[in-house]
Length: 345
Image 1 (cartoon, rainbow, N blue to C red):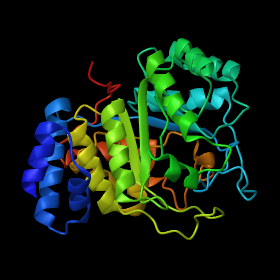
Image 2: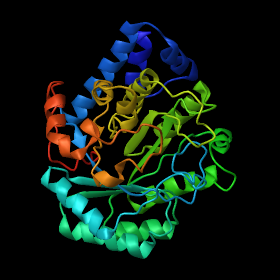
Image 3: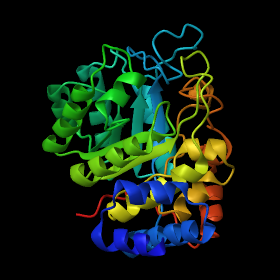
Image 4: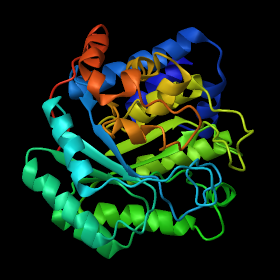
C-alpha cells in the first residue's frame, strides 16, 4: 500500500478504491508512512513554520437551523451574544501584542451584522492593523456583500462546503438551505479575489467513503487556498445529538491525503481535534497540517459559542497561552512566527 501513497504523491490524484483502502487499513506502518510523506511535503513548501490565526467568535446568533449545529436557530437554551465593534478591536489588540498577524472573525449567519456594520468593523481593523490579514467566516451572503467586505479590507473567507454531494447536503441541512447556493458562494468568493477556504466534517451523519471521495475531488478541482476539516462532534439539542463522533484517526488520514493532493494548501489542525484528543493539534501537524487557530474571543463568551458539545476554548486552545503553545510545538521541531502565513503566490 506504500506504493499507492507514492502514486498519490507523484500524480496528485487517487481513486475511490485507493481511498477506501487507505481509510480502512489497520497497517500502522502504512498509516505512519502516509503521515510522514504529508508532513515532509508541508515542510518542503512552508519550512518548519506553523501559522497562528486569532479566532474571534463575534456572534452565536444564527438564522439557520442546520441539523448538526449547537447554535442552530431553533435552540432556545443557548445564551445568545454579539460582540461590539469595540470588543472585536480589543480582541485584535490583545492578539497583536501576542504575535498574531491574522484575525478570523467567525459567527453564525446573524442579520444584525449588516454590510454597513461589518464593513465598518473590517475597515477599522485594516486601519489599526495594516500588516495583518483579515479572515471572515460568516456564512452565506450575497456576491455584493462579499465584494463590499473585500473592498473594506478583508483578505480571506472561510466557508465550509460541508459535503460535495447534494443528497448528503440535504440530509444535514433544512429545506431552506441549498447545496447549489453554497457552491455559488464559494465560486463568487474566489472570483472576487479572496483567499478562500472550504472544508467538511469527518464522520458526519450519513457520510460514506464515496462522499469523502467527492470531497477530495472537489478540493482538487476548486483549488482553495485553505481547507478546514475536523471530526464531527454531536451537539446537545440537535437532531444529531445521539450520533457518534467522527474519529481522530480518520481525520488525520484525511488531513494527510489533502496535503498530498493539494500540496500548497493552508491546513488547520482544528479545535475539534483538540477536543477529542489532548494532543490533537500536535497529531494534526505531524499529519501535514500547518495552521492552528487559538481563541481570542472574550473569555466570558467563549463557552457560549457551543457549536458542538465540550468545545475547547481554554488551555492550549486559548490565545493567551500562545507562548506555551510555541514551546509545545517547538518540541516537534517547528516554530510559530509572528507571520500572516499567506498562501504561496
